[in-house]
Length: 77
Image 1 (tube, one colour):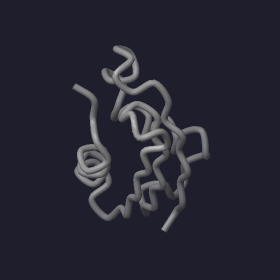
Image 2 (spheres, helix red, strand yellow):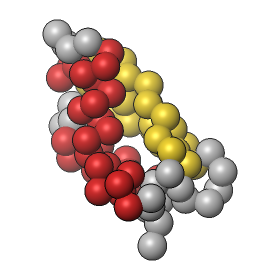
Image 3 (cartoon, rainbow, N blue to C red):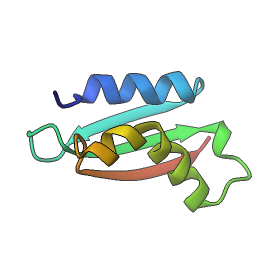
Image 4 (tube, helix red, strand yellow):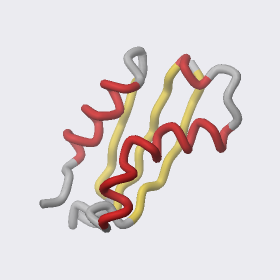
């Protein structure tokens, strides 16, 4: 069963408590997403570290192919 935008947003907000997240299903198939995350937790992190922190939340789904593509845009609050 594929994840939906609400599940992805919820997982991001659980990890980045002060974060704002917006999730887009790019194809309607539930396996290509773009996330935009703003959090003060990104302070002091490189862009790559920020993206790795978000990507790590979905490692199992990316490894299994449940999520095929995850585009990430991060903003430091």
